[in-house]
Length: 223
Image (cartoon, helix red, strand yellow):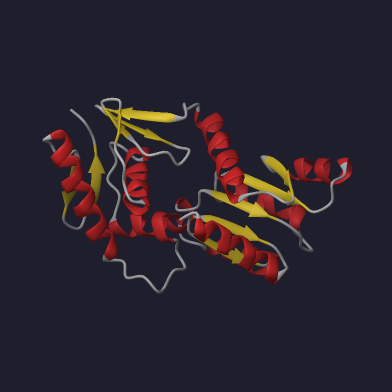
């Protein structure tokens, strides 16, 4: 999920709509709402955030350090003013990157992925057994051959691989795939997506690498 922080409603709605078209859940806050939320949000909610995108607001430059107290997700600033002074002010405030408008949501996602790779010293892909999962939106591969998946199933596989060896709950998967504020989608839809994903993996591998335990959640691993 991408969290957009800007005091302008039109900007917030614009970005959340653009991310939605890319299949990425997002949520918009003004600076006052965001400060309250980020200081009180549950750890599971914050863990679902892939990146924070901050724009204009009365307290914008105070946000990065507030975020760092609760999350290590990338913080990207969007600058409306193409000046050295504003760019330096953003970096001084603690952001990880600064982009200038107009910027495509795919560029923001790519920059966020690059920041996460640097922070975690990861490559642009992760291999688990014969499965290779990319962090830049590409379809995964199995034994070097593209394994095409619908967007939701691909993102679930990416999330499971990112947390490989660790069990994650249905709620955590839902938050990561749909966002923590999507009340129009039932949480049980995750079970349907995972069931379809497991059938496709089993058909391709003759083995189901996703282990599930009732009340504990799901885990992907390869012995």
